[in-house]
Amino acid sequence: PRDLTAAVRFYLGRDHTGAHGAEMDTRATLEVLKAQMAKYPSLPQSSAEMAELLSPRDPNVIGRNRELLWRDGELFVNFGKKKGEKLRDLLFREQNFLKWILKGDFDTEVKAVIRDLLEHGRLPAAPAAK
Image 1 (cartoon, helix red, strand yellow):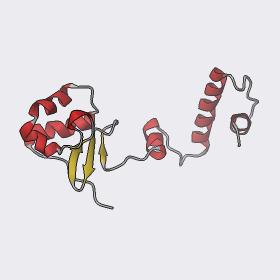
Image 2: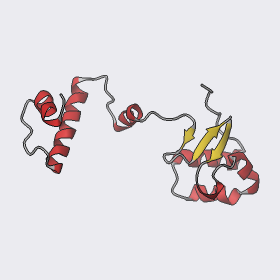
Image 3: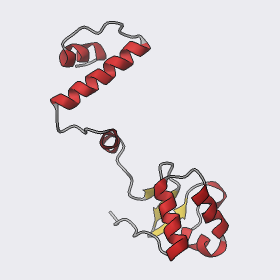
Image 4: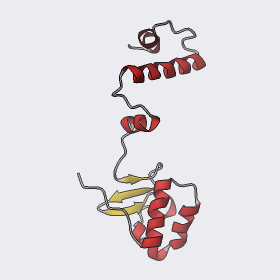
């Protein structure tokens, strides 16, 4: 189907009443998506799977806001005043910054990396080079 009205007709077997109204279009879109997921089991069945399909995870990035970035086998801070600094170097010079991250509103994956660095002095393995 080329548009939402055609998709409603094809997947739901009915007319799309209220077409071009924000609420009705949103409801119809959700119903069509659910019908597509039922009709095509190979489609992702969860929001996490759908997100991975639509926006594949970059193995060189850690954090929903790209807070940490792998480059040349080193993990770098990718935000704020410390942007561009090696995370490993901050362990010796800026532990307060790392502790601030642990207390802040950061992704759990970012916090796990920082916690492991502070507690054990280790970083995760760098992603394989392509």
